Image 1 (cartoon, rainbow over the protein chains, first blue to last red):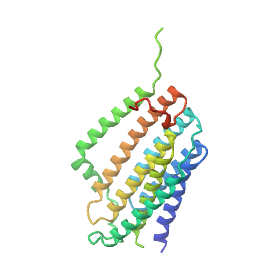
Image 2: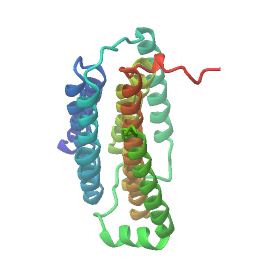
Image 3: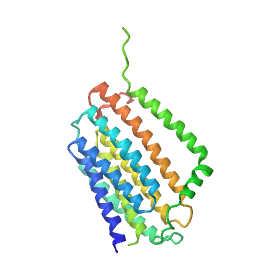
Image 4: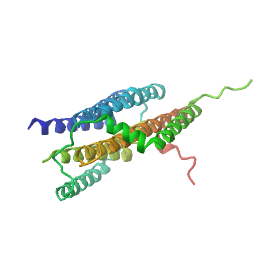
Length: 164
Length: 102
């Protein structure tokens, strides 16, 4: 019984963190709340039995992206644009109900996937074999992409020095 | 209610929150928050289905790691664009960035 409640509580807490990150008055508190959302997602991964992915999520999102966002908020400042579009909330809620109900019915009739039985525990061998055997070239491309993104970000953000 | 349904509903909820933020907020930083929430919702979906699928745990985890890496690159470039936009105009409201409008 407890096994069912833990993911439900995680969903609730992560949703609150995600909503607060969008709706908080202060951008700094919003960034902190977004970091809490990332922590909640990593707890999901831990709970699903995927510890390597959870650590990866913590290292990249909480350790890098959240800190980067915090620094950007400090540079840019709080800002004043908080205007929302309240009518979209009703439309969004309606869309959410439609998607969730259709997903529920789809999963109910999904015969080939067991929705209650998980696989046996995490295997580092499987992950390593997948990364090296099947996705080796993709990792190289990803490395090039990350390098290009780093150069692009530096080129965009650097301040031009005026030649005198 | 079984376990996978909880994860899928949670993932859909996060996705809906992200779409709401993307559509309703005009601050570029809030929109970046919303994009990150959407990417994380997709990642949770991948991980949950990988855990409950009857085969291959490693491949889906590898794909989730690739998604996280690309999201990191996207966030870095996005934040650099935000800083540049702030430097040019003093605010980061996307409604006012319309120089490329035809």
